[in-house]
Image 1 (spheres, rainbow, N blue to C red):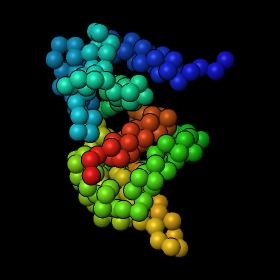
Image 2: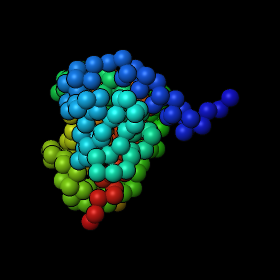
Image 3: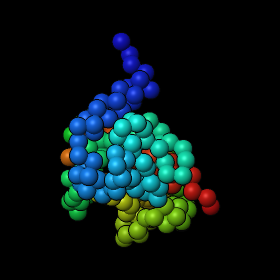
Length: 202
């Protein structure tokens, strides 16, 4: 039987909240870089703050609205698994468990849209990255490091194409991600950051 994506996300969200209900919110906050208030946890997601209510079993944006269900799953997996450490070592998607299996998904959801949106204009990516809180690094024609979550660093890099070589891009993750996020989670995370970059005003 084929399970619809919405049902799969709903099941994953419910399972994560079941686990969160057994956990010390203060410790979860400390390990994830969040701030606890009662049974609520506030966690930075790039330039926004998500509010996770362990009792109501909801995730919302501070200020209104909700993340998409796939991002809710990634966030919940992060707060449940983070150990409060950034390794400081970059890993490519294929280096993570099942990364090779999911690589075509990662490529289609994140790398192709990245190149489509910015491949001819690295300066556009640079401007969007600055608005999203990225830090410029010396790699490619435009490369920025982001703290997607307080203890999860992500790098987005673009190489501009020319008449002979097509534009290309890559997204790297701090190796710590492998301790709490699976390949499918990382593909969703990469899709989210590219989408948020593409939606930045010119």
